[in-house]
Image 1 (spheres, rainbow, N blue to C red):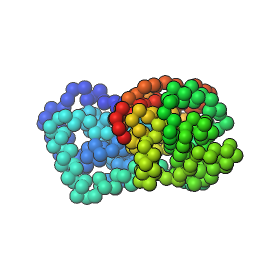
Image 2 (tube, rainbow, N blue to C red; image 1 turned 120 degrees about the vertical axis):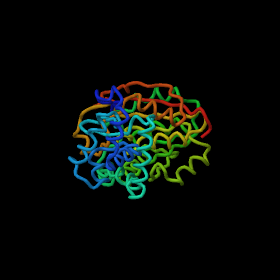
Image 3 (spheres, rainbow, N blue to C red; image 1 turned 135 degrees about the vertical axis):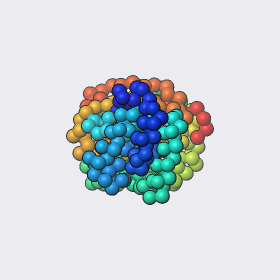
Image 4 (cartoon, rainbow, N blue to C red; image 1 turned 60 degrees about the vertical axis):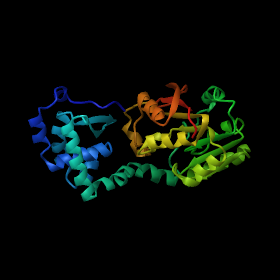
Length: 321
């Protein structure tokens, strides 16, 4: 994933008269409002506007040329986001577009549209066909020096998206309690087998989404987590920043969050394995942790023969959860 790019034509701001002409079309107002609420593909905008993709492309192109829509590439996919919102004319256009979209119910449909990005992953998870461990057959040894630096806090660790539980035997001896969380019953069944065969009495498995209130209450009742791990999970999530924000709230003061996921790559075949995103820029991960109130203490490549390569970022809670 890369930062938003504005077209060469946007280096000089359009004159007021040009902006008024450009924004005199109600569909362009709608497009601005929708892309301000969420970064969206042309296909998703087509669904929201109930127009063909070529029609939407023709209507977005002048907005891109004027610098009012920025674009970000994720593999071959392009996502659009509203830009130039410091311009009073653009702000007025955004408000007008929001009024239109609110009245027509289009803004309310965005979460459902975004959730569809996860459909492939959810089906594969339900069937137990997705490998959610760091990499099948790869040792967890690269994590040992990383975890040792996060002690002495050792009361509770939470492994988000634990998959078949590859990290659980590593976490169990280091923490008094370990909670492995996954939304897939099939993957948790594999994790339960690993827990039983490894003899891990302090590990509890929970089938839950990240926003499950019972999970949050259990962690809060324990005083918060000393460690939360999110390993090869964000790539399957439509809104990965939400997962990071929720995980940060699980931490007690001084607790650490470990995120490991792919660097940006172009392996489109992974879409068939449920990948919503083809990697993340380190600065994007850093921004998500900072926005969640964490101090970023380490960023870098994760040692090991991973393909595509993995990166690691560690954040520390500096406020009470």
